[in-house]
Image (cartoon, rainbow, N blue to C red; front, side, top):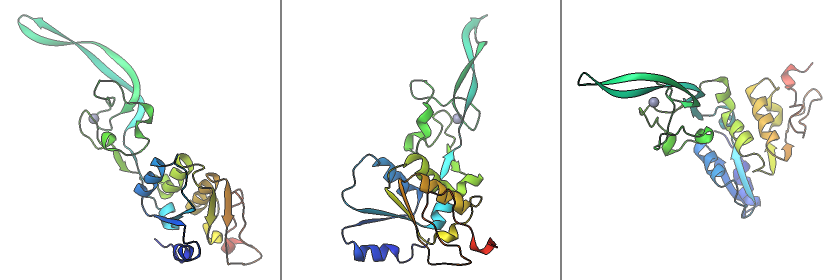
Length: 219
Ligand SMILES: [Zn+2]
């Protein structure tokens, strides 16, 4: 993770600033928990490009969908307890990745749709069988998951998004370009800095519509 000279210089120039390095998913979750609190002064959050791009966020292993729950009746037949299948109930909810049964709370009710908003102790494992419910997100999206988290869960938390060396952030098909776009869309104001002027292309201050062309592919 490379933050460059920014945090150090910021502390020197704005001594009152609260400088926070976002190093891991837990740091973002802290912000999420205080997302409704007012800032106590200037706050600067630093997200290294590698962190934004190569997130190590997890996603729930449970899937949302319809589950078929067998209903049984207990009866005594010729002196023996027998379980008789009396029907299949169809319910929609979060399903355990192990057997596909619905995840239920202590009262037996299916857990709510927003149960996986964030990793917590109570949603770490299936209440029924103990299967771990959070897994590394191996999908393509994993590569820009922190930016996606900010985009979805911390929209408007930061007033101004500042992108340094914006010319390196690539086209909209690249992970870096998608990162830039989702972060820019989550903040009302966006600034882009670049020291590189090449082939007439220069960094632009915009909202990610044109994410800056990669100078190496410019004609
Ligand atoms: Zn289970």
